[in-house]
Image (cartoon, rainbow, N blue to C red; front, side, top):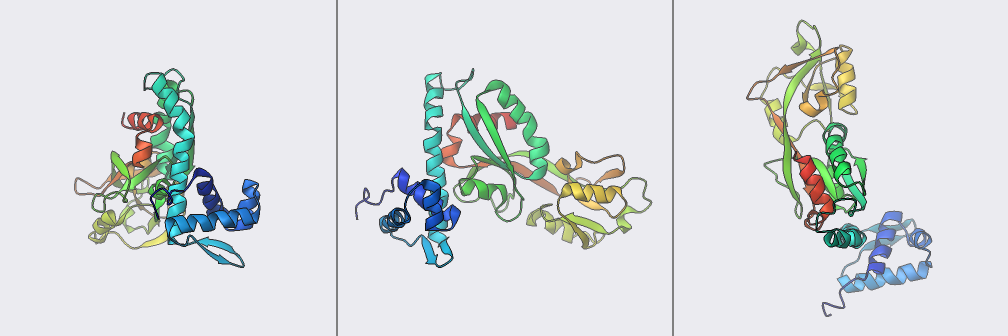
Length: 296
């Protein structure tokens, strides 16, 4: 098989992506306005070209294999570059910066809750002032498992705001950088005589394994007895005297008067928050512009 024979055309990428997202050939056909046989034929042709089975067929539909998941992620990213091609060319014609409204289109961003609330808005405000033609679409995702970085890998976001583990590094194939380093602090009900005696409140997104190691070395920190949905709920519960918590700075921007914050000293844990993107998205004017604003 020659290299040219192995190439998938844009319409083939759209078909395999539709099957992956809808979970079946019939549903994909309905989405695309094609016949089921045309979709099935296209997928079989794509599988022959790439030399791998992309879907497990069954009575309940079509489930992507590991190869199919990877193919769908790459298809999203490739088709996304087709979408931004026009905007990039117009920006180049305007002198490369896309200023004065020359740069237009949607910029897809994934971020965990506290970053979406407190880190992104000032950057997006500056971006809108410089590039009014860019329309930001922000998806709030839980920063557990693959988190915001996984949205970028899967092609569902052009840029993600994620927690970065210095020891583990970035996921393969991604570029990124640290935007802010947050210190953790002890959060407790204001005026409580002995806050360390309270039960510990926590939530799944609070920190990664590198911070948990610090937690385990502190004999005064009890095991979490209450798990909340997110950091906002933790702050509410702390303010009502239901426990203490150890939280990063971005989350503490919502703390009210019922909550007191005590620093953990220079040896306390920190959390790195940064941006992640793909090499192809990093080359686009819109993503470069957003990164500049995030770094200010």
